[in-house]
Length: 191
Image 1 (cartoon, rainbow, N blue to C red):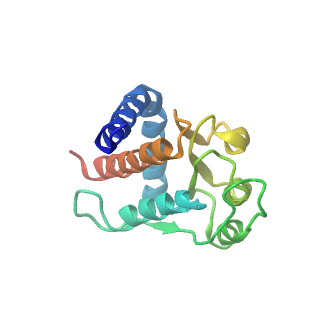
Image 2: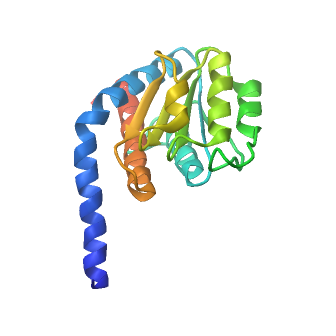
């Protein structure tokens, strides 16, 4: 296969996966936007975490919230938690996210937890600590959601990219992050 065809195939795979995700993700994204906006309107904050490349997505979401997406606005209260964390549940669990949530998280705050397949031990532990502190959790994952999806409560939200490829999952979760930030701006600032 020529390289140019392979590149075109990557674009087509992404386009088809995003088309499949539209109906599946619009409701949990809208619910998440409302939860995040309510949190911010009640002087809460948004904490984000993720291990490995999901950590990049978590930092990106926090950066957009504190800075801006498309429109100028005051910064919003968001913190990207730092830490290496384990990428897979079979690796040792780094409790750094959980310790930061214990120090910074309060009832009414929201945790945006990113995990490609929902198996990161560090992210799972962070979610459990957030739940124990009466924080809401929005989990952004792919595949079937893994162990992370299994520990979510009814009031938490699962945003699950319908893909098995890490590349397609990350592409979908990046768009989901942009939808969350755009939705918050829409509810706070209007059209």
